[in-house]
Image (cartoon, rainbow, N blue to C red; front, side, top):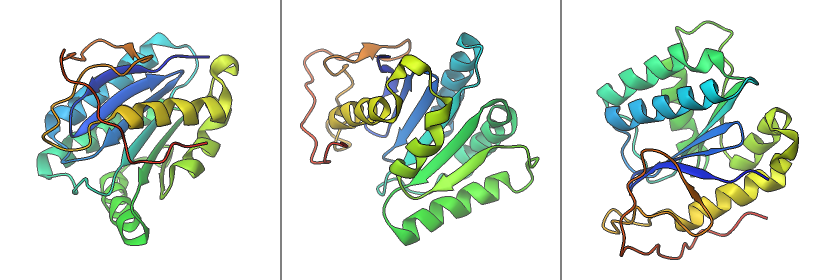
Length: 195
């Protein structure tokens, strides 16, 4: 089994690595700086593995569309990094209209991309796990391991902009670039744990 490595986390986003998968969870506004940080994480993951890696971006219902600067950085990510991946998936959570909005932004960013770009836009994480499963390492724990890793991190992700939590949850390994903040304990999540 592979451990989750939290690379960066604040109230607006959480970046983590599990096996050969880079995950980005967006809860609040996407900034140019956070997209650049995400790009750095994915490049570092790719440099570490001989096998192709995957990317999963989860856009939660509370995350607004990215502003122009963030869209520019996302287009750069799509152009320079995504073609080197085995698979890249963006999940727009929050129902039909929300998923359509996320897909529209993604399609606009990737319209001028070569057809080789393996970008997919989905409306739920479960469909994403099925597509990512063939690209996981044999010892990673497969789809159940991925579900557990994602559920564990989401259970510890800050619930509101005022929580200020940035420490590592129990059992989650630290990654470079995460600034632990002693004295701030995670609040329990109301999100149901994936099974």
